[in-house]
Length: 242
Image (cartoon, rainbow, N blue to C red):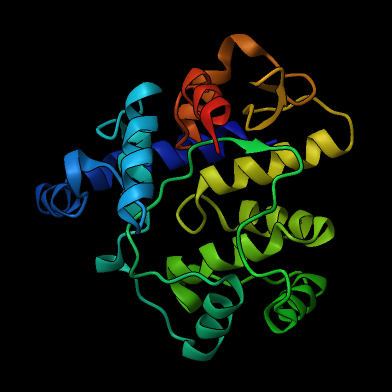
């Protein structure tokens, strides 16, 4: 489970950075139509706007802005071009595309994003995980870390290693939203209750949580600390997901 100190530190770091006027202005300018992250094709963008509106996705909320700033290309730096390029290729991820937030839901049997057939990046991450290592923000940048997270979801054992390494790195180095998704997935796998309520399944056309939820009274507090929208928003998005 994400420690309370880990989540508290994530919230403090986000608050300090978001109070900087210059960074906040750059963030607002980069958000696109009404601050929403839009998909590449016009049809997909229109569908995304409709889903955001229907489910009341607040692109001015701190969870959204925290994610947006964390992954801002303007502040992304790295030292290992080769490793970063391998991860980006392996995940099929282009950091120049429009920002797409982690919306806090996964559906059972859904195929994870990334290229499962790319064995180069997958094998590389497996070897790193076996040595208790993981790509760092300083080494591959936030885009490279995001790519590694995408790839890890194709391998349940690797996802466990990724989760532990990202937790150890701390909130300044890892996205708490991505850690939350990995943690909930693992807890569902072993029959434990979810912490953040990110894992769903479809039942009669409606998304319901997979398994049980720990301490449901405070779930939105935990989600806020993990840079995730309220549970009701994620449940709505999971229901309308195509």
